[in-house]
Image (tube, rainbow, N blue to C red; front, side, top):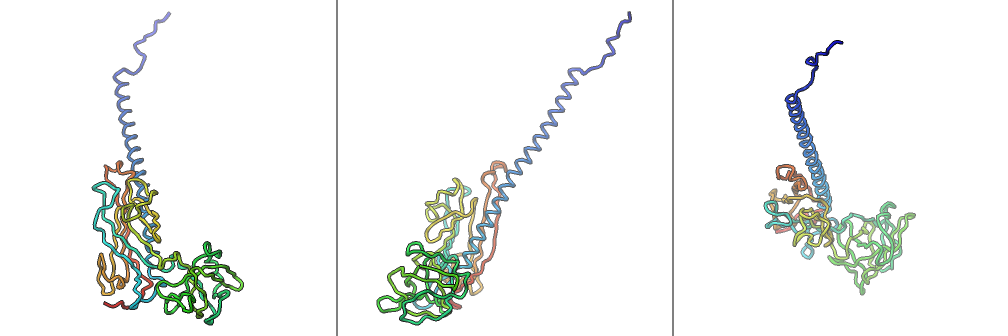
Length: 336
C-alpha cells in the first residue's frame, strides 16, 4: 500500500482568518457609516423640503390677504378713517414656547377688508326709493353661485355698497335711510340663476326701501361687525393665538386670526418681519401713518426642529421674502 503525504494539504491559519475578519469588519463599518450618513442627510433634507413648503404656504396666504386689504372699505374722510392696514406693530419681545436661544421676536400685522372672500354681485337695474324690494336682478349668473341662501341665521350676510363711492349703504330704518361705517346688514333669503336674482331679507331690523342704483354691489360679508379683520403673527403666545392647541409642542406657527378666530397655517416658524413702503418713498418698520402704506415687504423665516440632533444640534434655516402691493387704497392722499 502507498502512504499519503499529509504535509501537502492546504488551509488557512488562525492568523490569516483574524486578518480577513478584521478587514471585513473595517469594510462593513465604512459601509454602515456611509449608509447612516446618507440616511441622516435624507431625514434632514425631508424636513427642509417640508419647511420650504410651509414658507410658501404662509407667504401665499399673507400675500393674498394683503392684496385684499382695504377691499370696499369707505374712502377716507373726516368721519371715516378705516385704513387697509389696521395695525402694524414691530416685535419687541420674545415669543415662547421655543427655549433660548431659539426664542425670537415677531412682528404683527392686522388688515381691514369688507369681504375676505371678495364675493359680490352687481345690481343691474335701478331700484326706486320707497319700494319694498323683491329680488335684486344682478348682471352675471355665475355670481349668484357665490352666495348661500337660507334663513336669517343660515343665509349669507350681505351689505350693499356703492360701486363708485364705496359708501356702505344701509336700509330704511325709522323713516331714515341709514349708511355710514356701521350700516344695516341683510341676508340672502333666496337666489335664482334664470334670471340671475338675489332676494334679501332683513337681518338687523331695517327695511330695503332706500332705493339702489344700477352698479351698486351686493357684497358677502364675513361678520356683522364691519369691517372684517385678518391678523398675522407668530404664536401661540399671550397676544397671538394663545388658545390654539393644534400647533405642535415646542414649535412656533404662523397664525392667521380671522375676526378673532386663530388658526395655524404654517409650522416650524422662527421669524416674521414686516417692513412698509410708504408714499414718500421711505421704508419703515412701524409706520405711524397707516393710510400712507402702499406696499408691504414680508420676510418669513423657518427652522428645522425634528432633525436638529442629526445636524450637530444645529437647526437649518430657510427664508422667503416678497413685496406685496396694496391694491385697494382708500384714498390717493390721506392728509397729515
